[in-house]
Image (tube, rainbow, N blue to C red; front, side):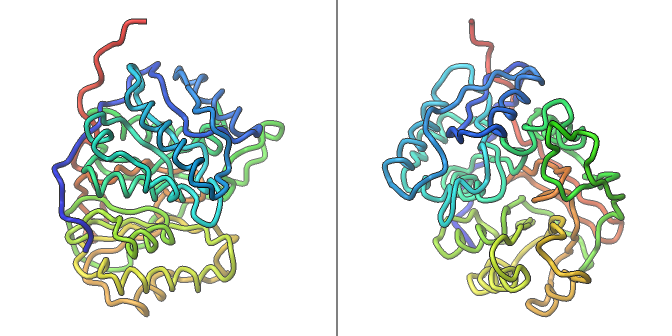
Length: 344
């Protein structure tokens, strides 16, 4: 299911001290903290001077798409990051998709990174260009923690954006449901020991990573904006902000089933659920098996989604999953050689 496969485009790897474009400008303290967080790690952020959240006006979405295009054409830009995932409901970042110039993007590949609702742009770009995109940390969340950003999150981002394959994923030793630590209260993060992954279905599989926020995946599948999913390793998570989270999850999975996304998968990775949005005793394995008879290995409770820390997952790279030995191995590099140095 999905569009026909396109030749894979690896963006240049991210160099220390690179310029980083930031889409949009939410006027809040977390955004400012995120810019400071990038600077703390030696990057040089440049913002698109366009206010967020999105209001539903096509002119605003068009301006943000044009800002993305300008960043890709600007010498020295190594990556473009999303400030936040929602950008606002109901359509969020998906409002940019009709205004994207996919030829320009394919001819000027750069690291494009965000998660949650930002997956609409990541998936559309991957589907229409073949460019690898990155489901990972955002400005107003992980980067806003600055020097207390989880080392697990930061190191995963650095591995994913280097010219080397990420290699085997490993569970984080600890996790927290708090998306960030308020700077005035740095020592009070609620930390939990990580019990590890939950293997739901047996087998082995190998294929490109495709995924994102579950409800975004369902919407993009209906609208024909997903990369090919036949033979893919599908990853998903969600935070279920509105209503009954389990019912919303079930409906989205049913949509993926009805659109054929689940028919020929090589594997499935499920992110850790935020405890606020699922009931006590919730068993994801029970719901998966009730909605769908798995034909591929499935593992849950991985470190991505709306808890911390998170791994950065490159959409489009080959990944091997083996339930027999309990491994998930990203075997292909997500980026190519870095950009040539640009004189300052």
